Amino acid sequence: MSSYGSQKKQICFESTTKLHADLKICLHHDEIKIKDFFNEIVSSYVSKDKNVAAFIETLKEKKGISQTRQKKLKEGRIKQEGITRQFALNKNDIENIFDILEKEHPDL
Image 1 (cartoon, rainbow, N blue to C red):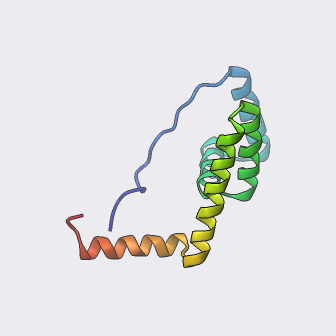
Image 2 (cartoon, rainbow, N blue to C red):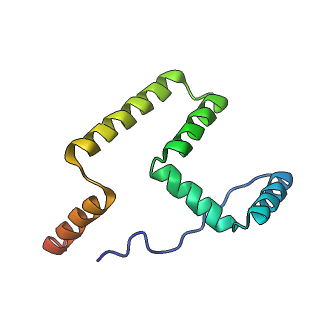
């Protein structure tokens, strides 16, 4: 079985001291660790969680990502969802397919 995805990786970025302090205060109030917060946000973003996707659409508008580009991305997501439904594959099914391929063809 592959060890891909099981190793730890740090994600670093810059922000203001005020925003950092406000975040720490809010998370402390909600009893959430910073790493848990960011891991959940990133996981939700990557898995295309509907609530996070709506937030991302608002962020794109705020940051001025072109309407044409947004339309193409949205069409791509809709097409991807259709293919996923068509083949009725979930993440576990896809991982199982890769595990089977890895066992049958270890040289890949």
